[in-house]
Amino acid sequence: MRKATSTSCNNATIKPMIYKKRHYRLSIVFMLWLFLIIINPAWAQKESERPLVSYMVQVPDTVNRGNQFQLCIVFDIAESWYIYAPTGNNAAQGMVEAKIGFKLPKGITTVSEFKWPKPHFKGSYEVYEGKGIKISSALNTSTDLKAGHYEIKVKIRYQTCTENMCLQPIKEEFNIKIYIK
Image 1: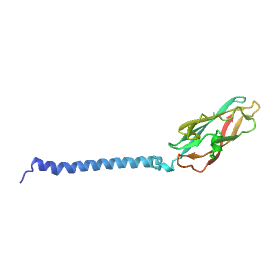
Image 2: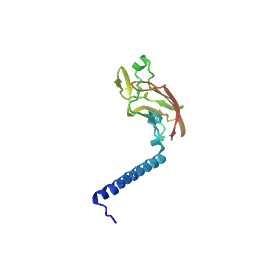
Image 3: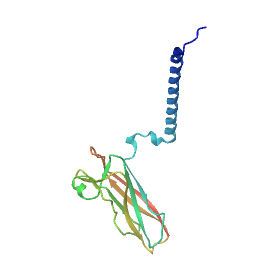
Image 4: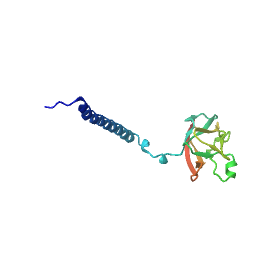
């Protein structure tokens, strides 16, 4: 029986073992990645399928009659994208400025129009970009309101752009429910 020298033993057995370990590690990484995609399908979305602009509406669940409350909309805009601020400057250049409007039920009135944060310039345009862009309006409830649920109809319009292109303007309508006690 012939004994293997340490050189041939190292060359013959260690290299395949290292290969197998790497292959095994890659399999574990792949299986973990696949498992995470199955658990959270949003990770599997292509960047182009994710919303470029999202927003969240913030209102109190309950308001006492005769009190004021804030209606806030917080925008999050994807990196390298922006929307046009409602300054009049952008519309004069042919761009669709962001706009928020609402229809209030009888007994709820506007105390102040929507307050927008200060935009910044991108070339000759005034824009918003990034996350946490908060727009708010103060509303007042009448002391004559009956207790119950009321709906505020909100309309939002904006156009999303990069430095190279703009998408078609978006118009959305939805209702917000609030309870007056």
